[in-house]
Image (cartoon, rainbow, N blue to C red; front, side, top):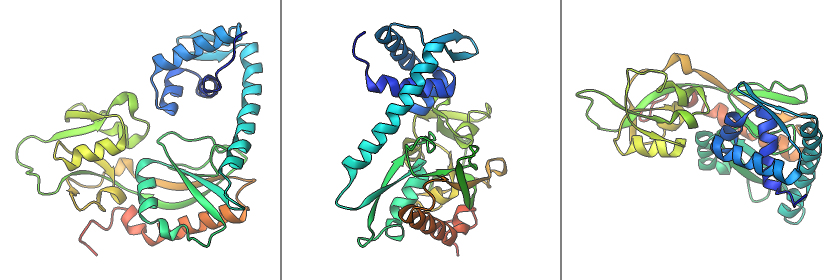
Length: 291
């Protein structure tokens, strides 16, 4: 047996958890074809079949289940090494996973979440995929739904509204042109909304929310954004009413074993305070320039 690539084992865990290539590719920000090639390479390195491949998805063989158990143990060990390597003196690290726009909001208000006197540091992991809190990929996850696992705790922070936005001052005359997240990269309901309405004239697609925002800002077309992102941008204006069907909540999700850690607790409390102070913005009740 040749040496096994740890990165392939991480992909293997994603395929096993997602039940197939597409779900794993969405989580990893890759393509199903690339994920499939890496799983073939892993099986060749192990010398045993790890999956039963069906049209409905991938299921693990007995060897696959045995490897998954060992791979998870390795992932847990890697996490402890990562914490050790990241440690600076006695400062702990609180890792916060959030989508692009939530991470942007927190970064803009970072002084409300951390001070130089704090005995910890904050590490943001901006991703549309849900990182694995149960297996300690992060300490805190900012999500649009409550946790479903029994060993995770949830706390709602805000109601989140969505609306169509366009470049400020862009003429609304003539047929509307839209921009959207490409279907193969759409990981959220809001990202899928435009593509679910075939009557809309989509002129450009993006593979990530940040690029979508750039396209809207450049005047390429109308796009859907959370109001707390679009209404904060002076270069944007709303191009229509709130999209009621996309109204959502924002939740803090944390592992039960971590939520009483003083550093994690302090970051959670500050996120709640910050979000509560901007509740009207999140709920779409405070467009830019209005009070």
